[in-house]
Amino acid sequence: MDWERAVERAAELILSSSYVTALTGAGVSVESGIPPFRGPGGLWTRFGEPPMDGYQRFLADPKKWWEERIRRLETGELTQTIFKAKPNPGHYALAELERLGILKALITQNIDDLHNKAGSRNVLEIHGNIYKLRCLNCLSRFPLEGFDLSELPPRCPNCGGLVKSDTVMFGEPIPRDVLNRCLEEAERSDCMLVIGTSAVVYPAAGLPLIVKRNGGVLIEVNPNETELSYLCDVIIRAPSGKALPRLVEEVKRRLASS
Image (cartoon, rainbow, N blue to C red):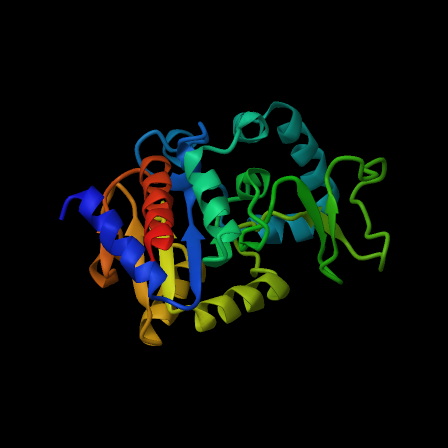
């Protein structure tokens, strides 16, 4: 099935479903100029993977971690690339699906805030947001910009707990509030769009499995085969920035003619 025909089948499945969700990964942001972590040209491929015990290192010496973090915010290649990035047509297409009342929730593994900037509202950032800080005690989140970093490590103004970046480190549990919401959305979903993710990082990669286990359908949008491809009901083998606007166009055409 060529990708244009796959789009038509995907639109049919979306419109016959009652609760549509999406899971997005790094592939969605590649078209905004943000390199992936893995694969050809990936940051980890070029510079090596970060330490697997990053969270434990933070807890052992949060002051040192924060000093290094501030330097990375000012000069790090990834952070500077993210700060300059803008949403692409794939991000805007998902925001449009939400405005149409079709997409109920968008779960993203990306930390770049581009879904929010594109206008999506019900965004669950399972790996956090580079523009936010999070209290490890009460889970309050704060904008990075303007937060008082004059004393390191910073403390939560609400409860006095230790504050770190909202982005989830290796070895760090997914914050329970966002993980619970992601699981709830997957349980409710009878159709999930799985977009631009290699589907190897858990627990995010397990969310489509919940949908499938409950009898729902999976629609994959990815130019490459993934660990989930064999389970998907429709596969659109095209970049999300190309496929998703076409999918929204097809959905709107069918809505108008119904």
